[in-house]
Structures are given as C-alpha cells and as structure tokens.
Amino acid sequence: VPASTVLCFLHIAAAREGDVHMRELQDVLGIASSSTSRNVAHLSETRSVKKPGLDVVEAYTDPQDARHKRVRLKPKGRT
Image (cartoon, rainbow, N blue to C red; front, side, top):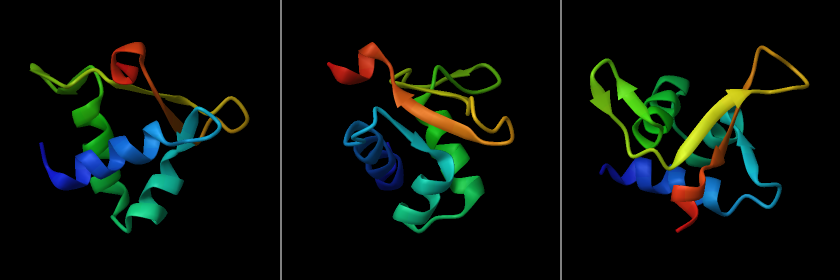
C-alpha cells in the first residue's frame, strides 16, 4: 500500500466529525485532486474496474453540496 494511501487513511480515521471532505484531504496531504481520488479509491470497495480495494472507507455525496464528496470509515476500517 503506498505511503500516501496510508496517510489518507490515517487522516480519515482521525477525523473528529466522523468524516472528511475530499478537498480537506487534498489540502492536508498536499496532493493533487487526482491523487486524492486514487487514494480514496484504493481504500474503497472497488479500486477500479475488476480490481477490489481495501473496503475500509466509503465516499459519498455531501448532503449540503452535491458537487462535493465526503469520506468516512466503514466498520471494517475501525477494526
């Protein structure tokens, strides 16, 4: 697992509100939006077509702004 993916997971796991805005991950980790998406995909259920991810986080549409995504741990990611 790439170091940037591990850092992404650790930041999501440490989130006080239980979830993190994708833009926050990008800013805190100092990586491009494409890298943020790739890291979150690696941690999600499906990394890419026919390639499973680690299934420890889920990305969902921000209920306050449908243009943005938020990320939270799944139960598997808490254990």
